[in-house]
Image 1 (tube, rainbow, N blue to C red):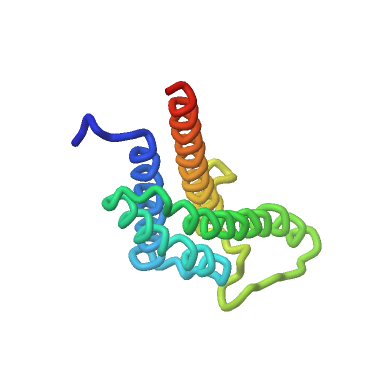
Image 2 (tube, rainbow, N blue to C red; image 1 turned 90 degrees about the vertical axis):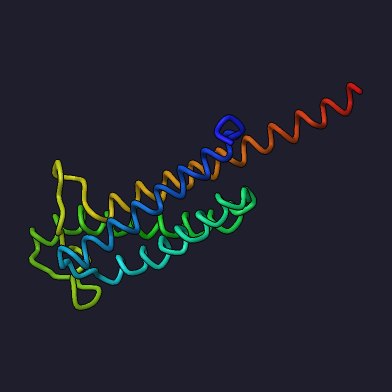
Length: 158
């Protein structure tokens, strides 16, 4: 089986691993470290958690057609992550200057539990995960188009 993997299988597996790491990471941050998620974090989780299940089932079944269902979830999740990261980085700086406060629930969306290298935050990590999943699905699409094109050309030559 190892030698029979196609490039699309590897991309599907990689997307599944990314979704698993993102899901387990968010659960670790909230359940082990006790970081309470804001509303935008919950929306990102709502979009990421099903990807773990969908991509896992698709990988084990060899179903590359799952990209039709994964892409919308990943694109919407990525947009929410980008918006959340923007709120944290840009609006937090503006708030410091004006002392105005925004909150999107019990926990402020500007809350910065994690800040590595002064720009890597939880929404940034979620954004990277969604982008990697989108890239894997896009790669699968391109590989399938190449494969279909090759089959058409082979039929024309025959």
